[in-house]
Length: 68
Image 1 (tube, rainbow, N blue to C red):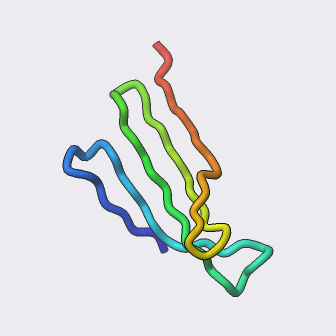
Image 2 (image 1 turned 180 degrees about the vertical axis):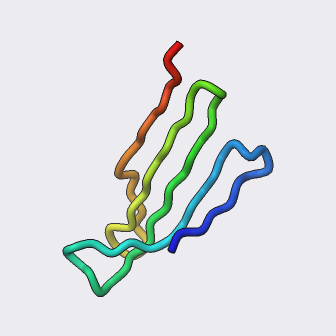
Image 3 (image 1 turned 45 degrees about the vertical axis):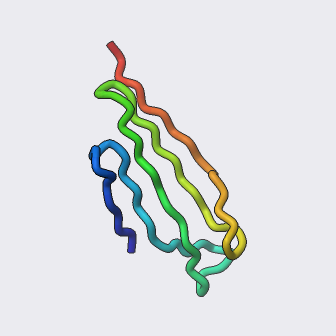
């Protein structure tokens, strides 16, 4: 399950939860996703994984830019 909140501006949304994978199916680990709405034309999504207890790592950054 993943739950999230937005900052006061509503332009940064952070979702936190747990994930299971094929390597550790019985041991869910924390992860989180941050959506940054930089403008109406550009959104940035960052995914962080916990690879070791207390050690978060940025694993993916996606940028969506509206074509004009």
